[in-house]
Amino acid sequence: MQAYSAASVTRFKEDAGRFAESVKNLKQEVSAIKTGDLSSVKRARAALVTCRNKYKRIEYFMEYYFEYPVNLYNRAPVYEVEEPYMEYQAPIGLQVVEDLLMDDTEVYANLKELADQCEVISTTASDIPATLYDLKTTDAELLEANRLEMVRIMTLGITGYDAPLLKTGIAESATAFRAMQTNLVPVLESHAGTESDSVKKYLSTGIRLLEAAPSFDGFDRLAFITGAMLPLQYHYGRFLADNKLAVKTRSALNYDAPHLFAANAFDMRDFAAQDTTAQPVLLAALGAELFAETRLSGNGRRSCATCHQSGRYFTDGLEKSRDIDETGHVTRNAPTLLYTAYQHMQFHDGRAGSLEEQIGAVLQNPREMNANLQQVVSLLAADAHYQEAFGKAFNNSGKDSTVTLRKLAAALAAYEQTLAPFSSPFDAYLAGDRNAMNTSQIAGFNLFMGKAQCGTCHFAPVFNGLLPPYYQRTELEVLGVPQQGNVKHPRMDSDSGRYNFFAISFNNGAFKTSTVRNSAVTAPYMHNGAFKTLKQVIDFYNKGGGAGLKLEVENQTLSDKPIGLTRKETDQLVSFLEALTDKLSSPATHP
Image 1 (cartoon, one colour):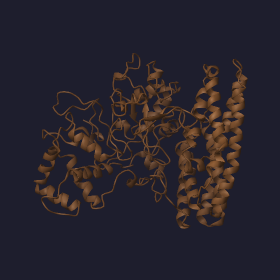
Image 2 (cartoon, helix red, strand yellow):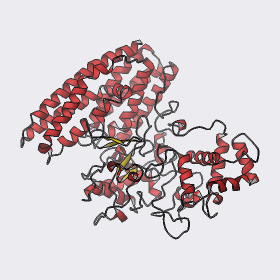
Image 3 (cartoon, helix red, strand yellow):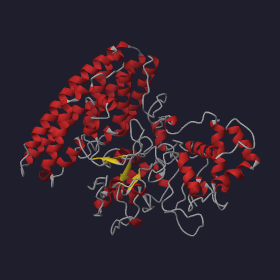
Image 4 (tube, helix red, strand yellow):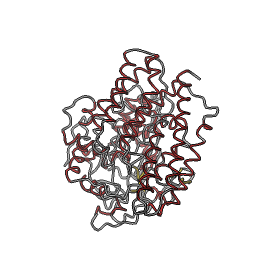
């Protein structure tokens, strides 16, 4: 074990012991709650706050090395389905304790479940030292763990992702930041230089900004990100590279990027298999041609571009796209293809695990493209232009081997992977142009990442369900979206979502969290196109989703509690979403 690693493990053991003691205290305070005695409830809540803060000191280590028992401490208070084994995990952990303890009307009825939760957490926390048995750590790994903690703070901590009711996310982030500073200063001082000095400077800046926050809702998240996090990431990355301490173990992040909001922040190899026989630029260009190719459809009149029009930011503007015969509609709304490559599930229900799999499914769907795949391949193989294009893209030639279904799907996928411009006013602002967003848009971002809780499901920087900091999983949510978007007289939507693919009750009504980038120009919204405007969408969330509208949505993952946004705050949120509209290379038009 190396010197820095050894010191980190020793510090972790000490902090883990303090966390275990805080859990014991939480357990005692919960057991001391008396029905009708609000002061005893407040003491238990205070103990939970302390407990969560103690955990934040060891979060970077626990999250990096141990999937279990971390899921007992920071798992969301909803059922999680483990696929493909069709098993599920019941809600458990500190977030469940928060959910039960913060319910003023039900807290006394929850005492038995609260006690059971605390018992499990306490037992597991006491066993943390045992998890270190035979654990091998290295300096580079611990430094990566801190690198990922920076992303976790920036995308989850300050949004209140794991403490939405307590609203202690800013204070907890300050605790995690101080722990990170304690962890890093020794190695920074042992490799003294310009970059180490800059890292120390921005660590201090981050702590200062977090600790000066007036409140959770009042924290200026954009100033924190631009003034501390982005320069910290930049200099820390350079420090690791200069000292040959950089290692990448599991994250989809590209560590050569300057920071999380850079256009090259992700490594596409973590999202798609790379065909080593292909020429990437030529392959994407071929895919762009095929995207508009009507011979991919059964009737020779429809192409991918029919429902994903570049002039409409790769949507069609309809609630549900027309079917191939133009006599009816398909099941769901056509989502934008912009940033579609940055996720690990395709389709609204996530039933396709790759772009290539999705492409094959769409081509064969009788209501979409209704293609005979062998006939499509034969038609393209007989075309001299495509013979040449496929040959160049895949570094081969020959009429009989040039075109295959695999190559067709690979080309279309390669084109879709280029549809991630990161060219919005928000991106320009993060790149240094402080005039790119106005004050309303800045306020909207702070609401999005704070009070409005949008950022707890639409994760930065793609603002979809790609879960930080590893970005190896795409989340689905149950929102209870009604039919027709009628929130005054709502009716349950009949679409069961992922349940149709994995028939477990907790999947009923579950849909992938889509990106809100370009949402201002891609109406209508939701899987069923129910909402026509962004204000309607925000109003739906503001009311607590379907359950907040009194629909029977037993497994809703969105809180049913009203958010309390004002009309002005709604306008500011819309302004921010407008700032996420990309400037496409060919200007989009909207007939």
